[in-house]
Image 1 (spheres, rainbow, N blue to C red):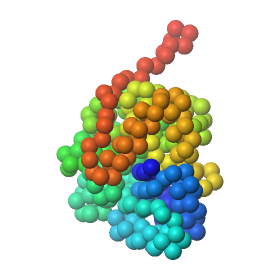
Image 2: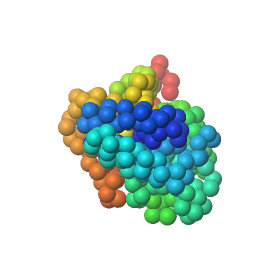
Image 3: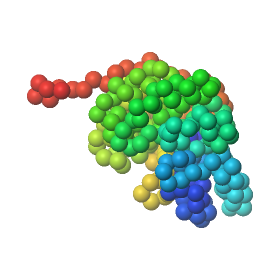
Length: 254
C-alpha cells in the first residue's frame, strides 16, 4: 500500500516531533501493510514553511534512520500546500514540491471555508501540467454544508483525498457520513492517513480498507489502492463521473 499524505518527517511541523517519533510512525505504518509513504509536511499554512529544500533534506535524514533501524519503508517527497495567492510563482521558483516530484500536487483549504479564488487557482495549476488533489474535503466546514462546491471543482479536473480516520469515524459521525457520501458520488479518488503521530492521529489504514470492503466490496479497495500506485508513477488515475450530493429533506425543508 501507498500512503500519499503523511506528516512523518521529524521536527518540521505538527507531525512527528523528532526522529524517534518518525521511526515509531514508520513501524506502525509498516505493520498496517504500508510499503511507501509520501511525506507531506505543511507548506505555507500560517505556521510552517517547509520549502522543497527542507523536505528533501528531511527525507534524506529519515531514509538513513530507517536503513539503520532495518525498517523496509520507502519515503517519497511531497508537501501539503495550503492554498495561497503565490502558489504559481513559488512553483516556478522551485519552492513547491509535487507528490513524488511527479504531476500531482496536494492542496489544502482552510478548515472552515474555500477561498473565493480556489476555482481559478486549481485551473491555473492544471494549465501548468499539474493535477491538484484537494486534501480532506470531508473536514471542510463549507464543503460539508455546500457539497456542490466540491462537485464543481472535481467536474473541472481536480481530484480529492479523504482521510482514513474520517471513514472509520474517528472525526465523528457527521464527517464519517459525509466521507461515505463522497465515495458514493465519485467525488474522491484517494484515501490517505494524514497521520501525525501514533496516538491520536495514527494511520487507520487497515480499518479503512475493512470499511471499504464491507460497504462497497473489494472493487472499491482496488480503486483507491491502484490510484495511489498510478499517482506515484505520474500516470493518469481512474476517475468515475462525479455526481451531486443531494441534501435530504427534513420535515419538508432542505
